[in-house]
Picture 1 (cartoon, one colour):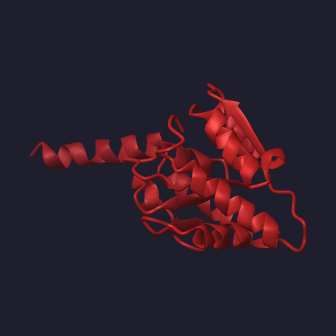
Picture 2: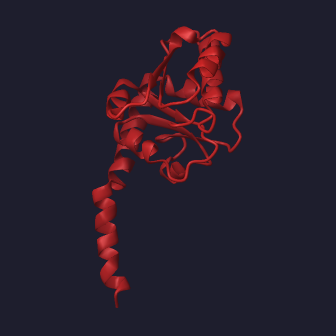
Picture 3: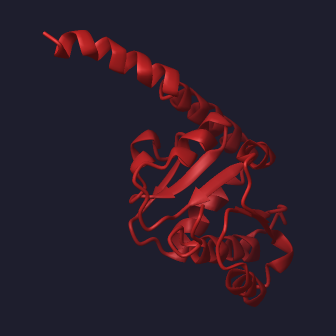
Length: 172
């Protein structure tokens, strides 16, 4: 969330513009951009795409949970992200996630079950297709619940317990 270029915000913006242009139901789609980066440049891109009114730059926050609670979908088509703790946090908040295959947390995402994993260099239509399918309320609800279950299995407490269980076996 620190660097818009690295997170490939341009792809998210173009994907959303594509979805909005094709959406017959006129679903209200808005993008909350949390973190810091070149707001002027990416705000300009949103303007060029005709979606300025749909994009909100929040800046940096210490209370990212509030934004998770306000959202339905988490999208991060990052170029590289070692683990992607934010993905786990988003899933724990019940968000469906769309991430690129270069995000470490991709192993937690079961495509079509709790989110989507994009190819390493995703096309705009690939992003738009994933977003569109998540705009269906029924599918979105189920996938969010599935994501929560996965996130619960990977909470820090659970991870600490698993590591603690391993120690006696290693220390032989």
